[in-house]
Length: 189
Image 1: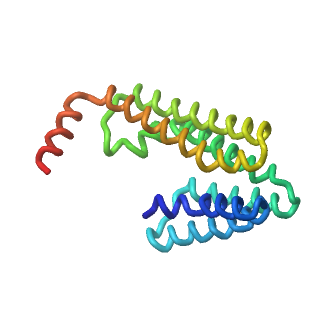
Image 2: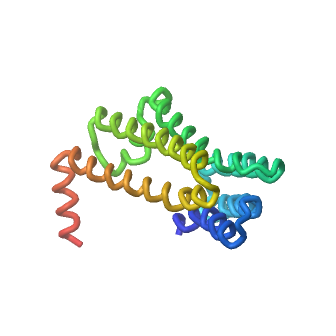
């Protein structure tokens, strides 16, 4: 359910853009859709993740600038800014509390050596930097419709591939006793 709610604003942006060929109209839909998404998450879970708030702020500010100045570049830069902020957060998180951000998110579910957590975290940093750079390349090189398609399908596809790659990496680096415990738990079900 939460994943669907998270995906809804970009899906609406995509649909409105392709129905109207108007990025300003699509952005006008994106802003309240993102506000509604965050409000729903708050109502349903009584908490909103920091990353959702950052994304909301950037949608409102950069989307608002797109509409006010009639310039799509603002909304096109938003994914890059978000990804680079994520990269920065992943990079500096160990300075505040010692643990990497990825370990804070997954550490209760998976036991890994500190060096492995650091490598995973740096992989996320590199991924977010690359995704932001690819976004700039696409919107500077291709037409607006191609960028909108990339925003939905390209970024989602790249993220899924990266997560799958991380799954393979994690499986190779998990302690054997953790793997066998999980296998036994599956057998009990």
